[in-house]
Image (cartoon, rainbow, N blue to C red; front, side, top):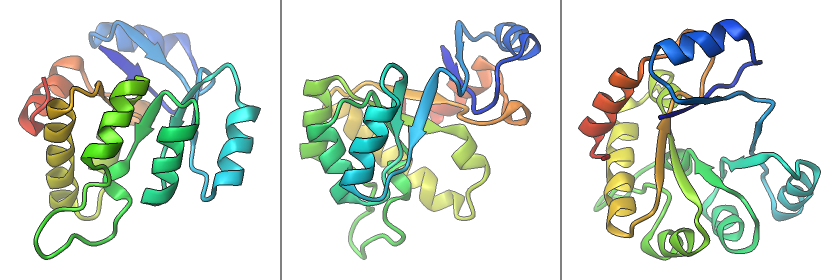
Length: 171
């Protein structure tokens, strides 16, 4: 299991991660999380961080769709937090079947963050949206990643994360 940490690399954290069961650990100097608000800024940021693993955290559905269709990103993170409110009749998880099919074709991974769950003010809504997105990702055969995406204080063992991932519906 891979672990993505938003902190600088230290040997103590590398050894702690291997003790907790992670096979590989990525620190914030090996990947970049982009949170661009418009298309022009997104393209400029992608060009600026060429060579690093690019993880995109979208702010709305239009920029998410553009990023999936037109850019070379590797992961999408935090799609559950795009829409502030759900519809009366359904959950608004941030992705739909069309964007998931495009993600499957391009090999883009849908990422879920344990840190987002820990720091959420409305945890029930977030977990419901994550569960729905996991079911959709499994239906359309999109690769998914569940990792801490947090600091050293939020580090959990692989056993804890895989157990929680199974409760959410992941495999």
